Length: 339
Image 1: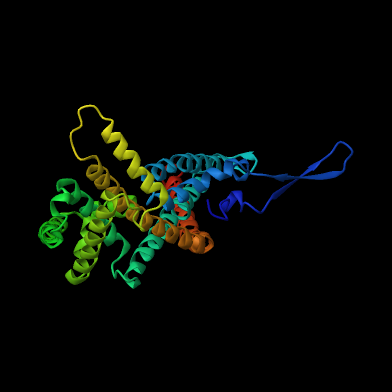
Image 2: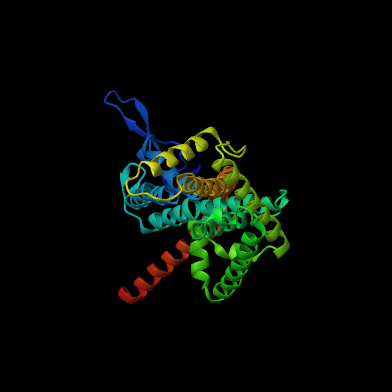
């Protein structure tokens, strides 16, 4: 988790509380209180949710699973601070409440928000590239292209690129119009969930101007046909890695060895790896956003800690809980003791 995780009655994770005891010889000795939840490897569990949030762009399922150990850790920490005052048993609802608020803000809400902000900043930086589109917009356009390729045979348009693009552009325009309409009826909660858990965001294609989308998609379609022409002629495209070209050859062999297969193995293999190439462009953009999330999280870790400790807890939560406790005690006395 973040530094300063052991605040309040448990103190910070770098500060140790000393208890003085008297030995049999009458000499005083000191022992240090070490919170077991701050010791490694247990303490490492507190970092998993932040890692999960940061990698959710490239591995959403793993990112979600990484919240489980962190939430278990938070629950154990909150219960421990409620039950114990350092190394002595002394249940305190006030202490437990403070710890719960601290963990909620400093361990969950604010670090996750920092990661998402970093990812969005990285995405927007795509506007400064030659493509002139945010990374999220590029992703959605690549997804649309993959779906379109699935529904059409590239070989039917080998010498009719303009016709292919004209139909593609018409389909994309309809998709953008429908997405705009659907976005108006999508409630705020769904927008937030999509933002938090990095679900596909088709509305990203509705933001840029049409000329930028036209330029991007036209260049992408031309590249696809160039790659297709090279593959069917057994030429390795310059955009392909050796691994991806070998995959093309492997898929072609698999088609040829499939019983009952009567298609064009080379064409079908080319189509298969072209879709893979498009998916790699999506993954590349997601990786850039992931890096952005890690960068902002790293910069904001200490400020978040200090803000929650010194501002939220000390200035608002602590006084509020003290006032509430005093009020409850006063009401109890008036009701039961006539004070």
